[in-house]
Figure 1 (cartoon, rainbow, N blue to C red):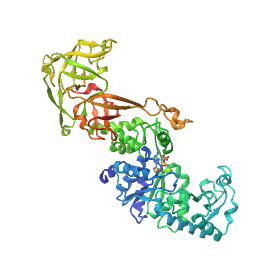
Figure 2: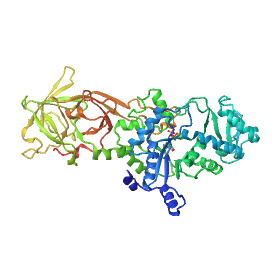
Figure 3: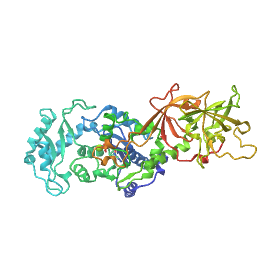
Length: 559
Ligand code: ATP
Ligand code: MG
């Protein structure tokens, strides 16, 4: 990863780092961190942050910490934490040393809070949450000082210790920084540093009755870990003065630099953990790893290669300008990657039987088919061919329009890798539905052009009926019908009811039964399909369509 990360495109953050390195002001290695709150599964936006933080550290031979920002015991869990670790590794990154936690610093954060109180820059307030909000003022009006602001240091120390000892109920008291109630920046109007929470924490259990707030915890954790550049999203720009204020007040080992960049948003989906959580808990989707979700687990289960996500993050770039990226741009990265790496195979989603009346019933041709049209190193596989094969229902038309080059009565078409066949008779059931096509074949065309020079324009895929394996396919469409579902009053109203189509009886070439879960194939002419991570098995294969093909079939050659 280190070498590849040196090649990744430079961005404005790298320019800042290079200036810092040139001026030799840091006196320590470049250090970044990825600081997720373990209150949900990671999504595509987090991938941008992960790629940026880890690749920046790699590029400058520094380190990147994985730090769980676990200061809210009400919403956090071990399950989320484990999924985050798995996602970072899957994306191809390795954190420095061991995973860290804001909760590792609870003791130090408590001591630093005592220091603030002793310095007279923090006080215990007994206003209610509601009162604190009204006292804070607005963008146009200054805030009002709390009566508790002038509480003597000794009393603050006593109350804060009793808060920690669990003497009070939630909401009775908070600890606040004493900064400036008239500041034009609302974040500086005596923000809360500690609040009482009587919930058990997933790591520290019932040790603590008070929990530090994000703004206070984050900068101190960064400083304790000797982070050099603390990269976060734009909404924290207005919090930067507070980040700097805390570090100036406290006797911390260093003062990291916070730099903000634009969030990554995708159209036709939502990237907020809260919204994703609703989709999961209200069963609009089938779990956090539902392949329709933009979660890393969902995209992984769908078959998106992690290399495609890294490439996507590179193409999107790192800037200060918020934009929504088209999901189709992500799909392009997925196709570009899979075109190189996915072996080809054949499957039929909507089968009808094609019988070659002039092909001996006991004969079998074994075709040595290439696994990749451009990459011979991906090898070949044996494909059996016999008298009966399945083809797609829509590769036949009774009365085709001019540009239809597939099968029709009296017409010829090539079966990919195999023979040129001609449709002689159409068999229907009593409802007029086609159940079988009777054809003849030209025995001299096995992987070869017809001897007489006649041109065969159409090539269709097929699966040998004798050896076909039955399987299930999931086809996906956009999860939402509107470009920006987050803008709707209730985003669940915009869900696309047709986002998942399950086909229970697809015909697969025999080799696909042995596919390893998570392996991705290009089913010729149909798209890329991934053997489902959770449910695929040799006796009942399950494939998820990763993405459709952009390429047209016309480019494919017959051998
Ligand atoms: P959400 O809004 O989905 O809850 P969050 O910012 O609360 O996201 P965190 O777990 O706090 O989630 O995020 C961890 C890191 O990932 C943070 O540094 C955050 O800035 C970054 N991050 C989160 N969402 C995005 C995004 N859409 N684009 C880029 N970075 C993001
Ligand atoms: Mg957050």
